[in-house]
Amino acid sequence: MFRKLLKILLPLFIVVLLFLAGIKLFGAEELDQWLNRIASDPDAPVPEEADLALHRSMFIADLHADTLKWDRDLLERGLWGHLDVPRMVEGSVALQSFTIVTRSPFPFGRERFQGTEKCVDGDRLDIANVLATVQGRPSDSALARAVYQIERLKEAAARSRAEGRTELRLLLTAEDLRQLVIDRRNGEQVVGAILGIEGGHWVGAESASGSVEKDMKMLFDLGVRQFAATHRFDNGLAGSSEGCERYGLTQRGERALLAAEALGMAVDLAHMSEAGMKDAARLLSKPLMVSHTGVKGQCVEPCRPARNLSDDQIRLVLESGGIIGIGYWPYAVGPSIWHIADAMEYTMLLAKEMGLEADAHVSLGSDYDGSVQPFFDVSELSLLTAVMRQRPQPFSNEAIRNIAGLNVCRYFARILPGGSDALALDICATPSSDGAVPDLRSGSTRR
Image (cartoon, rainbow, N blue to C red; front, side, top):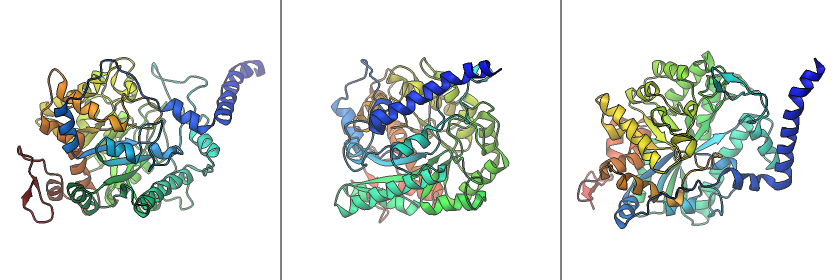
């Protein structure tokens, strides 16, 4: 029995030891460079002047980036990774959700399966804890790691103003969003930020309060406005799409999502099991979100089906009036940059079949700096605009504007505190054919 156990545990111990030694030897910076590379695609388009002109004229928003878990200065242009404020300015990004990872199970070890698929076991070594320790960050709890990342964003935002740089502005209310749109239309150098949680593993369990509602209120008071209950493994709130049990919402999970909705947080169903998504759709009344994903119906190798949405899951989000952020990396969409628009089109066709406005529910969900290899970093985002315009069945300019950011703008204008359907239409208007947009201060139209 002992020999059998040793045979199982020794290889795992060696792999873990080598991993930890690698981080110690090469450092978190090298790990960042290795995990957050760019995927090459020799068939990527060259943006034409018309592509670039449209791109520069748009309100662009992205629903998911994990940049805060790495020790890079958000205000400095990085030499690696995918996103920082200078590169966001180069890519014409107006609004970015900065999502916070607090637990990430070690990917190697004894394999477990859910049906015929390998699953992610949440009991394995927590790499997020190891990374936090190496970087000198709090590592004693998932909550402490979350708070640290929240404060990092706030510090960068304050420093951007104090040093007269492009302003990084944390948005907390629908009125903050209105002001961001006004300021950008007036030519001010400002980028909006939404704080999000990717996996509320500790909520109602690890904190001193032990109360779901108190924990959610604490996150809200800290500035969090986007909440995903799960990440890549099952937890105490819900099953994960890649987890080993993949159950629905637990009682704690139901309370957490109801609290998020009542407070004015966007409920993000990214990584949630199909059973959990069905529970959430039944439970909640406001539009839902999936911040970063691909679609199973258009999943080409090396795309991973377990990570992506089925047709039924897409319909759940669309029926709620919500939005789906399509990712840019091969595991989400397949081997080519052109597959990003294919996944968008697939979702749009489902919306059309349901009698909905086809391009009103698709958005951008990059997963930048999330240990993935997208086809471009944020400074090269005009490549995606070129893909949407140069594909065999090009998207209309209006559809591209909606997908690139107006859908996200409208979504947050409804969900954030003080938001409403009327405010969404007011804040996030589509420019007319001659380029005119509403003046949000007076109700008039200006060019």
